[in-house]
Amino acid sequence: MRIGIGLDSHRLNEGTKKKLILGGVEISKDYCLIADSDGDVIIHSLCNALSTAIGGGSLDTWAGEMFKKGVTDSREFLKVIVDRVKKKGLKINNAAIMVEAGKPKLEGFREQMQLSLAKLLDVEADKVGIAFTTGEGLTTFGRGEGIQAFTIVSLI
Image 1: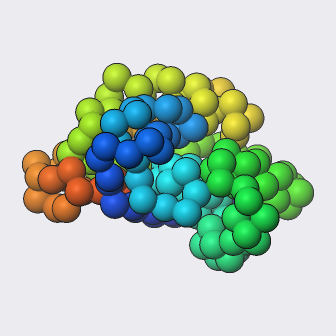
Image 2: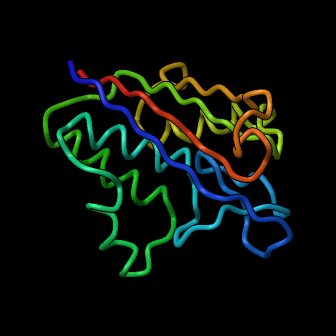
């Protein structure tokens, strides 16, 4: 068994033409995360967790080249690291994801994100847990200035 932990965060921007995408799901056209890619902090955090679980580094150490080639869809980054996990003879047992965001409200998208991520990870939906908090507005994320995600994965 192996365990990995991942984190990612980006600033939130309002009133842009770029979409807010989290967990591979379009959340809003009124907000976006400032990033070179689509800024999907949930998938980025998940990629970091999977990479650390197999002894790798952060997302940029292996997906940076993909971005330079024009790949901005974070689901493509996730497919690469899931393939690496499988090539090591490991299987994803489960993923636990915690998201801190003051806005927009995300709970209504939880099931859709869960199904999206389960499909990408090739696991049953109940193997992907996602929870949301505002942290009572104590951090910049809870005050709506950005979104951050923490992920823990277990591999067998």
